[in-house]
Length: 167
Image (cartoon, rainbow, N blue to C red; front, side, top):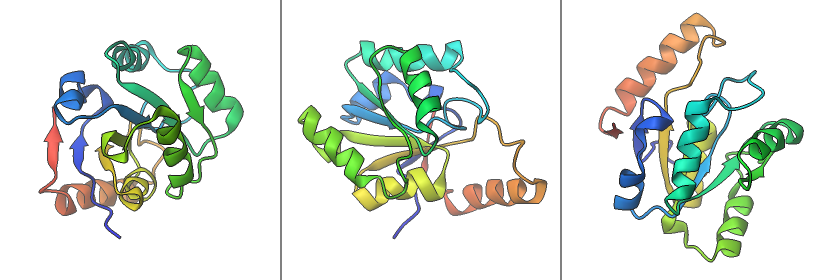
């Protein structure tokens, strides 16, 4: 199974409404930790909140798909109102959640995209499902051990050099 994303972006903010609409995306499944906010953050900052709400205002559905604890994920989702959230999703094996949401929304897998910073969680989840993904740089990678972080950055640059960058 491939761990190559469809696209890469430096940050979630590089993924515009125009880009999503041009690629016929109707629903975005968003990772939270290190994609939208720091691992230890309790709530989203203004930039992340505004970006999510902009998608919703432009008729792009948003769902949070996180491996984190329910209480934290639901608190973040409540911050934005009616955003549906799925915690302890067991990515990359979250296909049952994604397919369930798509069935409820009466939407096809081809209209979905998974956005996240994890190669072995978010990107692999999308590839196992047969949908598209955007691999973003982590919001904060200071928690990673120095050599591992350097290796991860090299790996992404080298292995994914032919993956199109957004933004």
